[in-house]
Length: 613
Image 1 (cartoon, rainbow, N blue to C red):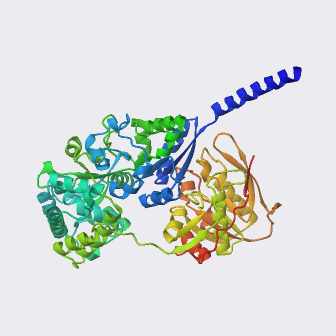
Image 2 (cartoon, rainbow, N blue to C red):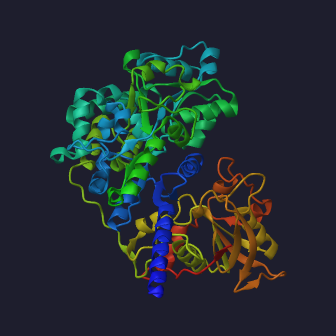
């Protein structure tokens, strides 16, 4: 009897002990970020604001197609962010996303801005974050110096361009080399047309696949291409001076070779800070001042995986996270500049001085959200560039655009590179992250290096079992990560790892757990300081210290700006790295993977590479 009582007491204690532990367990939430800029202020703020949540922040890819692939592999994250977005592209994700139309958050938006995201059923699954503003950046001092009036409508804009051209100065310059510039210039020149009733009806049909209509509206779009043809003539566009990249355009503007450049309000802020230039934003002009508009696009769109409804506590936690992100403070932390506008009624983002000439547009809510489907980007670039080179006139451009945007297009199937048999999870466990380790082991084998060091975002997902084509392998690779190779001594390798791990002068290169470096061909130990920072303890190869008198053939893979930038790690790059670690623009992680995996070869198995003490 005594033994039974003891067993009963122990059972009760164990039950309450386990219940207590479960209550204290953190809620795991995965959030895929469209860009590393979201790790500047937003992610640290969320971790501090929600200590009960174990966030898994991943820098993914800014592509709806990327998330479609994750859906097909049954791996959608809890919270999705994407900047290059249109409802047209996101249709295939709809049944996997939470309908937010009845949530409190939706009520805080101006309804006109949500109309672009509303499905035919009334469901809203994507919410737009604060607006980046695109338009004209004008050098006010150059206008004043040459006694030319800042334009307030299209006729005055046309006259200003002519006046500057007569002085040997470009009136307006655009980086038509980029797809987004082509898309925005084409739409920007006809915003009043695209925002009238005919334009809105066409866009609703196009975005929502209503009646299967995805081709251009004849009357509407012929006017758009006629307007754009006139716009190219009025701004004196030629193939040599305007068919340039952003950096070239910006230098011309800095050097007073152009009075107006295409750009964002964020660009305008930087120009003022770097050069001291009196630069302001101007809108895309209409026939009258009242018809002028600012072209905008959300900093990102945010959606939630419907599967969170299976766990009540997780659903409540994520809705609280969304409410925080769309709050006044949250939007200020999401935006990467001081010059954004809000689509929400109750968010007070201070109007930056770069908007001094476009306050009327802002007060009237003349904020056009660009139509930015994947096909719109690619087709706009090709058609606009051919209009610049005179290969197409406005009618030919319209016809070709319409042919290529024709209904019911079938995406070309890319050939399979390999059928991966083993699954390697994307999660930091004892010994390291299996997916990152497998990836880096594969790169090291492909380049025949003794040691490989990966940092920032090495991979963006698990290594899935199943087929991979070239596009899918590209999505696996961390965005904007580069390969460097060279020979380093023991001391230099240790210095590199200290640079990637240790805090120094109140700076921390490891801003979240996914930034703990991954290595191949060696292993290391670190101390967890229990405050989000770490310290390197030792570095070993096969359990032994590195040799003092040996040069090691090392490959490094990552994005240095995560570590060096003042808004991220704020840890300065060791000078010797630039000299010894050579960067080859032709060598990419994708090219290495294609070579190594061609013909069905497999990713290398993961290995234990880190001990956290």
